[in-house]
Length: 408
Image (cartoon, rainbow, N blue to C red):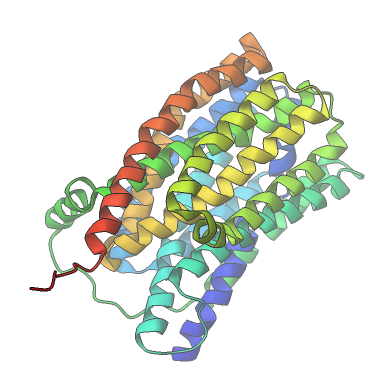
C-alpha cells in the first residue's frame, strides 16, 4: 500500500495534466460563435457551468471528506468524459448548456478532492518518513504548474488541429476526455481518521474554522476568491479581446500556450520568489500586476495589448500557488476538501450573476470600455483583501516568534 501511496503523487500530476489538456478551450468562443451564439450567450453557458458548480461544490467536497477522495475523483472524471463526448453532436445553445451542466457536476466532484488527496498523501509520507514526496507545499505548486503546462500544450495542439478544421479539435477533445477516468482507477485512498460527528456539528466546525479560527484563513480564502474571479473573467475574455486586436484565429492556440506556460512557471517558482522578496513584497506585487496588465490591455494596440495579458497570467500562477498552499497548510485534514470547495464556490456563485453581465458589456459597450470597468472594480477589491492579509500574516509571524526572556 505504501508503494501505491507514493504513486498517488505521480498519478495526481497526470490527472491534473489531462484535466487541463482541453484543446477545445483556446477556440471555444469562436466555436460557439460559429454556431450562431452571441458573447452574451457564450457567457450564459459559463454561468450554467458556474451555477451547477455552486449547487454541487460544497456537497461534493463534503462527500469527498466523509466517503473518500478517490471515489469523488472517479465519479467526476466519468461525468467529464461524457460531457466532452457530447460535443460530437452539440450544435445549439441548449445542447451547449447541457454540456456545461455535465462538466459542472464533474468538476465540482473533482475540485477540492484532488488537492486534498495530494496534500493528504504528502502529509502521510512525511509523517511516516517515507520517500517519494516533495512536501505538501511544493506538491501543490507543482500540480498547478503541471495543469498550466497542460493547458499550454493543449493550445499548441489546438492550433495545429485548426489546420484541418474546428471539428478536428472537437474530435480530439471527445476522446482525450476519457484519460482522467482511466487514471483515476490507479489512485489509492490515504488512511486518515474520518470525522464521527454529525453533519450539523461538522458544518459548525467548518464555519468556526473559516470565520472565527485563524484570521489568516478567512483573508486567504477571500484573496483566492477575488483573484480567482478575475482569472475566470479574463479566461473567457481573452479570445474576444484577441479578435478585437485583429489577431488571426490560427494564432489563438499559440498565444494560449504562451499564457499557460507563464502560469506554469509562475506557480513553479512562486515559493522561491516569496523567499527572495518576502511575503509582504510578493503580496504587493500581486496587487500591482493585474491592474497594470488590464490598463495595458485597455490602451495597447494589436500585439502590444496582447502582451500585457502576460501580467495577468503571472498573477494567476503566483496567487494560486501561494494562496492555496497557505490555506491548505492551516486547514485540518478532516475538512480540507470541503474548505477548498467552499472557496471555489465563492468564485462560481459571483460569476453566475456577473458572467452574463460581462458578456452583455462586451456586446453593448465594446472591449476597451469593458476592460476599464474591470480595472475600476478590481483595483479597490485587491486593496480590500491584500492589506488585511498583509496585516494578519505579520501578526501571525510575530506570535510565532520565540519569546525572549530578559536576564534578571
